[in-house]
Image (cartoon, rainbow, N blue to C red; front, top):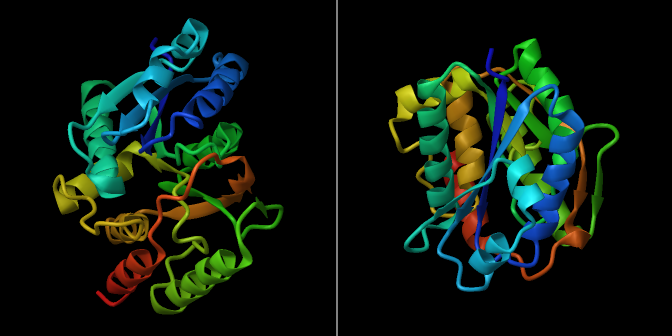
Length: 252
């Protein structure tokens, strides 16, 4: 019997300094939990202009093997939206080819999310939840290295969504660290076609959550430690466009 697979996609752009560190953590997780599930990591390189491809090419063979690493490179920059669309295309193909996929997930590629949370999140998927969010707002969560203004804006948008949309089980609407059941992946693709998101900025993460809810997804959250202080390089998020895009999703 084939071992159950967990596929994690990392949409990234110019993360040559961060990806080797993050993939090393994935390799540690795989070595620790390989008797429970087979981990597969898919790096979606969004036409990076730095040395991302060189960094991936010089990874230790042990890291590549433990993570079952696959790299998909966009010929042109498509933004986070394009990364999510590529991820869901890959998820759909894997789910339709075999029954061995247990869950799929998305994470930031900037080393601010730790893959060590995956086993606990996977447990919630196995309980029957469709979307499990690594939440900044659950008891036990911590945030390091994020400016208080950004934290305040994020918290304010979360409260606004809770008041307007109120997706049961959700407080953190924008964190990109999530696991999805194969059933919700199928349901969202059936409802939205290949365009599971359309917003052209970081608000697509909120849009994806709303689309999962519309498709009947049952959601929950787990606590985690956001280590933004470990991220090397500048943030790719454009705050004004993200806020405007998020408000558009809210008002639909």
